Image 1 (spheres, one colour):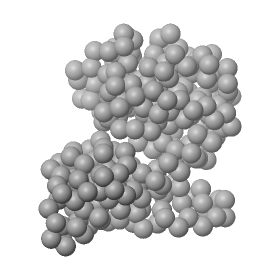
Image 2 (cartoon, helix red, strand yellow; image 1 turned 135 degrees about the horizontal axis):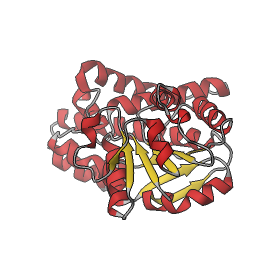
Image 3 (cartoon, one colour; image 1 turned 60 degrees about the horizontal axis):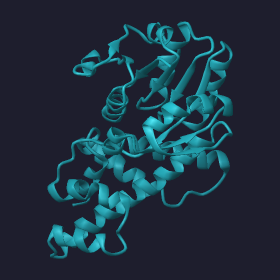
Image 4 (tube, helix red, strand yellow; image 1 turned 180 degrees about the vertical axis):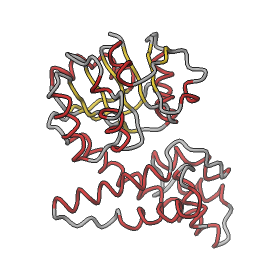
Length: 282
């Protein structure tokens, strides 16, 4: 199977590089061509040209507007030779948009799987992401060998839209935990504790979590180079609030963390790792 890849941000590049290390010969396209530098892959000059050369295209983009542009924009994917091919979209999209993307693809004989991933740059570079997949089961089975190169754990949630909704629900925990951990560290320092000791105690107590373990060094050394940015978690929590509104359900614990990440963005941390909310709280 010939594979294309679109979206070489922090996470996407780590995923693409891992697939190359697994022996796949990728064809890639990125809006910013400079991000393809050093990647041992063929470079297509447009999404349409890329899909015409491959059997499957993996997308890893920032949000649904970017996905729509890649699909329907000038020389977009839908303008290429698409019959019988697969789009594997690992973007965290809006739950309404994935249904539209699936329908757009189906009209021209193109299969679309939503497959948002859980995890950051390090597990992506190791093929250890968790993947949530919704769509046609036959297409899922065909795509499984590639999915297994990307993720260690794969959950097939057949109903279209469900994988995306579950990813947003997961990020409720992610954003809430990060905001609480950041505030606990900042509050502990204000109370007179050393940061390293605070992190040690939280790790052995109620703060112990994959979020704390993954962000401990960033908090300790205040190195907020992005693995997952403040802009991304803010976007995801906003999408989740949209879902709550559609469902006519209250959503108690998303609002304050979302606004904290919004404040981080307003104070210049848009492209910093989302753990930089610590600097705002401190």
